[in-house]
Image (cartoon, rainbow, N blue to C red; front, side):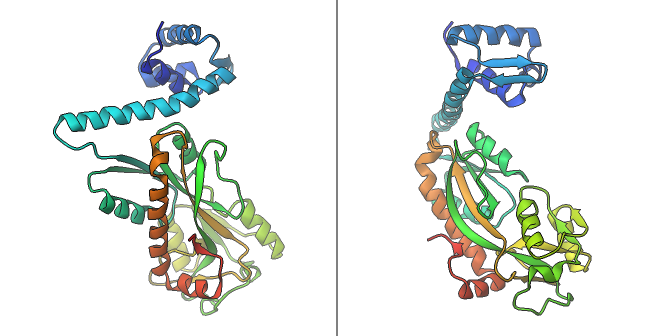
Length: 319
């Protein structure tokens, strides 16, 4: 049996779903038919692609090898088909960009700059609270680029398979109500907020291990934590029910103040990632440049951050 693209899609789907039964549902096939097809694929490739037990299906070393190649081939073929169809219909084959992002200041500016630079490009975006999910989609060829943030020196997810470029290093500030007793301070000690209630968005932010360590060093354990969406976090801060951590580039609205923390115990690295063995790698340098320009714009639009950068070197957009 000759190996076909549909066979690689089957292998990829089994790996993504973690079981043959779930993959059959996704592919719209009966499980016995998919099982038989998978066995034929394994015979064609010379060995088992998955280890199967009661917990599901996990790739064998041969399976990992095949998946790595599929993650390059399938996106490339899909892009070829789309560009060929566009050309056949009388249009130029504009480049496609699929960009995923976690909550951050860069995505809007990046899309705007990219669209201006390449008017014929097809740009799509996706968001997720999980940086790990975005990295996985890059590895699987479902995204071309991922914009994420990681706290301090934390390793970026999937850094063995994804190339990450540092776009910026930002301080983490504390967001308080303009009526807060500390709102008029130039900077605050983290320990001065020991009795506060905290609001936080879900995801891989600094409210994990980094904040717990910083709070412990400041001599306290955080009190009540409200985990909710951005709008609710902002509302709770504005009415004085909580304080929140925010990136230095956070765009303030009426009733809010962003306070730098003395000693900058929390730092946020803005990263852009891509798979080094896909067509996205060819344009990575240009995309990183657009991302840096977008970050510079965001920093300039934040007076609190701009003033802080004047006093603190080594932060902000990477040259």
